[in-house]
Length: 392
Ligand code: NAD
Ligand code: MG
Image (cartoon, rainbow, N blue to C red; front, side, top):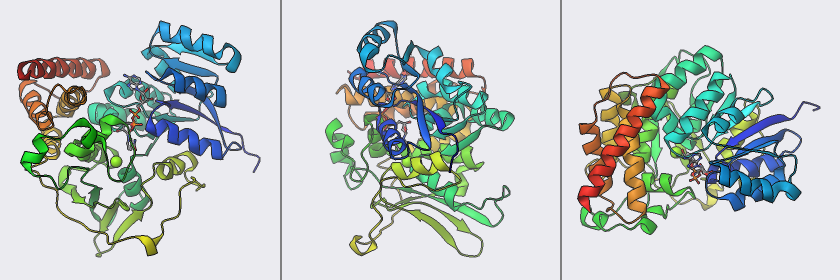
């Protein structure tokens, strides 16, 4: 083909999505080159990734981690410049030579560098749904202003993107069917839910993912965050979206049309499919994913979500309706609650309780600038921690 290799920055390279991204890139060395990688805690893995992909830049959280990584790379990848801190994350997201930014940091921490990529007009592969939940209006407005390209990598949103008409006006679309696996706790009673352990909550039946999103899948908070994500990405209201529980995770989401047609995107539950789609769009490339074998599929089943046992989905719709920044409050509360649950400090059913209480207590408004959103995020985190302390 003779085209220039695309230069890729991966924010959150050491995570589940980050590793899957490197896996797809490794299959296409003629098309993609790793420009920059970031990691947070797993320095051993980041060192291995730098040794293998020889990025020009690597980013770690602080100076001690930078010193450690530099020492390790002095022989393994001497050309890699090691940087640290939040400024460095923004910098590698906006490098002039960068073509594609994979936003795969978990949580609200992903918003500032994703926004920097949008400011710089990059092609952004968005896995970090929390950045849209926290700063939806800000991020979408920035993308619009700079002409950046925002491609959804979350499997459901990638499916919707593939099933929507290409014309901007969405002529003939009547609704979106956002599918949910229901997670590992789908069939548990209220009494059983009260006793769910972190190990159970993280044992997702179909997907292998980071711990935070695994717990979010178990509480259905993930579907709530995805509902908000879909509203921003596709300019929808929650009433335009039907959430359908589909435990097999074969259909990744669907679009319903006025003439009775429903278009669905299907595939193995493997993030390399949407990642490859985003990397090569509008072309298609191999992803290393096995073809879906229809003769081996059991039945595909569907059911309505149970908002009584899984109130987080309802909370997300309420937050989105309440104000532009109420979802930032809900997200911050949820990040703190999930961390406390994983640390054994609170029970599984305390997660929705804390989320709802923080949403009630922390006033939000139509905030749209980054500093104000991050301050609100901090206020909600403090409130969530205070509530957790009272539970112990
Ligand atoms: P993960 O926990 O496996 O990885 C998170 C990455 O972010 C790691 O590289 C970690 O080092 C980095 N990180 C964590 N905290 C950070 C901080 N404060 N500052 C900078 N970097 C930090 O998570 P994941 O499962 O790969 O998910 C990443 C994002 O993609 C999440 O927003 C998740 O909701 C979304 N997502 C994941 C999947 C999946 O299959 N894993 C699917 C859809 C969407
Ligand atoms: Mg998803």
